[in-house]
Amino acid sequence: MEVEETLLTKQKIHRISRAIKKQELSLYNCLKSIDEDLRFVEEVRQWYKGIPVLANLRCGLWYAPKPEGTCYFKSTDGHNNNWSFSLSRLNLNVAKVAAQKGGCIIVDATRKGKKFPDAMNKTIPIWTTVLNRAIRLRRESHELPGNAHPQSRWDTALHLPLWVSDVERSAIEGRMDCWVQNLIQVAKEELLDLSDALQKPLRPLWISQNSVVWLNEIPKVHELDFHPIILLSASQVTSYPRRESDWVYIPGAGDDEESWAGGLQPKDFHTYRWELLDAGPLQIKPLVSSIVAKRQGSLGTTQALQCQDLSPVLSVPRVVDTHHPAPMGCIAVTSGITVGNQNSFTIVGDTGLAIGGGKFVVNEEDVTHVSAVIDLRTSRDDELKSLNQQKKYPSNASEISKVG
Image (cartoon, rainbow, N blue to C red; front, top):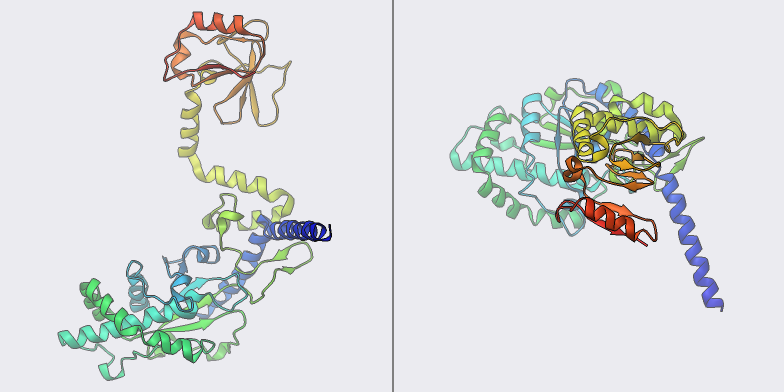
């Protein structure tokens, strides 16, 4: 008995915990948290004016209004004992942008209570080191000039943040030569082009909301001996959601958008940022639905109308039934396809479905538009027989079924 009570108690606690977590990860809390972190990103962008900003897909897009580009560095490639240099995600566009502009800023965030996601802790540092070493080897093998940077000063060291352990650093270093050779094999021509473009080696720098930055000592990019890849982690360092007066701060809220965004996209948020925040927790969901529908634009509207036109309810004039008002979200109509005294039915939103009472008869010109007629009434065998006699439906277009 005690075991059963203990089990029930644990289940109740689990359900309550999940309900609290779901409430914390609400649409409004996530957008409000992103806005909070976005202010920090905008401040850092002012420190490095003229340096292009790239959003690391997909979370980074929420924190980078109008980015100059995107990249895709996965945190899983930097997980402990799973380090990898991806040949399917070379991200050479990042190196080209850094070569053209002197450097770049990569924006991302994390939910796990860390300063930086593993993509910034290890994946990108591995990437910069592999590129630097591969370019040096290609220059040596082709006797290419070292550009403005002599080969003897071309930095090929592995630069990791201080919080990465020596054991992990050593394990990553042991895999470097293999990754470099793999890159040279699959991207020979690209490396030659990149070698011509890069005047300096690439090197990561880390900035988070915990960083201490002396604004009067921020160096100019052209004064550095390398092209900086500034890794900007937008989220605050907290292991748990932080409750404010009327909302809850969630670190890395832009992550896993499918679970909370309701179809809203980062571009939508940046366009309607202030309207969404002003809507508050109670009104934000209807506003998001409106924004999503608006984004779909004329194409989505046209497609919806085309789908609706396939049903007989839209092939006839609409006349509002004032005696039987339709439920919210529906349209009441009268159509020539019904007979009898109860000749009205209701279109259910944009679903293409219609609900109505009375004896339904489909005209011959509408038969190809009918997918199914479902009769939910009982003891209507005579009416069904009459309907079958009036029109024989094509087997692939219509079915008349009785659900008792």
